[in-house]
Image (cartoon, rainbow, N blue to C red; front, side, top):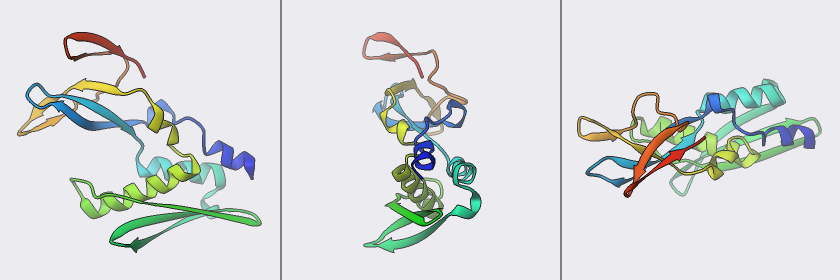
Length: 156
């Protein structure tokens, strides 16, 4: 049991990490922090590979107006359940809220938890219509960014 639960805490492979704009701290020049995340399919694949698709399940429920996801892992004679709530996304509010709740419940088991302690990344954004967005295929590896007056190298 401890062996399986320990594997859920493995570092997230770089190939599975995605990025999105965090806080835009310079709205005139498009400079922002960048957040790291994984998508729900990575969480599903990780659970399937480490505990088996037949040994985990999830369910959604509402509490005080918030959508929660509970993930239950069956480890033979022991079942462990953990849950968390999600927030709506800008693009698909209901779907985003469910996906966020699912991923946050997975963090309770350790999946993707390492992303909460990664170095803060900064990016020069691009203007797309009236919105600031990350440049296509942006990655933190060796991206020089300006913050204030100086240049800094941001590493993964």
